[in-house]
Image (cartoon, rainbow, N blue to C red; front, top):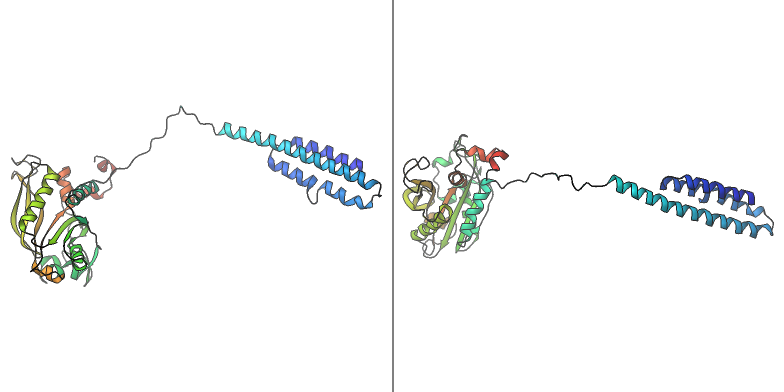
Length: 339
């Protein structure tokens, strides 16, 4: 049995020395020291030995096991170091190679203009309010004092989901929802997408963006409306910008007006942008109609207010001198990267 133990030790040394990977080393350990390994099988046969031989063979067997384990551990360290060096060599980085360039996106021009407008009005104390794009006929028309025969309620102008549900044609329904849920004073702007059944061309799109404003409080006058919008125009288009108001009709305001600004391109002298008039129309506005206040649970004898609305796409086209609304929605990076 001594010869067998010595043979196991010598064979294990050769096998361990020739192992190239940790996996091979583990297989050698199992072969010699595992539950069914060669050394284990020898030890199981010690019951056949005499009392005198058992301690001698037992001692020798333990020495063989210790030697094999020592050889395994030493070669394991060698293999780990070898693999580490190979990995470092394969993963070496040449810091002199130029780095890869990453394409950075740009803010969409509509978002840039929207944020600028929002910042101006928030600087005047307005809060931003939002609402659903799929609206009820009540919120989109009835609560806004729009008569049943108003052209905007026609199927040719509005997208109906059914007779009671539409894609909102303006963000005014947000104002209705706020007035019905909030007690005055109210001071909000409501930006968002709107939908109308328009043919697509350079200035029209069935999907577009609006930003509307609403102020409700005691003793609000037309002078407050004009002053607020005059400040907006000067901050947005430039300090030299002039404003003028022309009478108009909207079912939800009375009196109503459209506001023009002096052409920021030519300073009012007349050019292609203002079509020679020196003025550019930018929004509609007016004092909130008493019927709208009543419908929203606000006493028109106590409170008054004004509202205004502008097409974000049109404002962006004017300020950025873009001549086709379709460019906003084509996602052409050559266009977006200009801003």
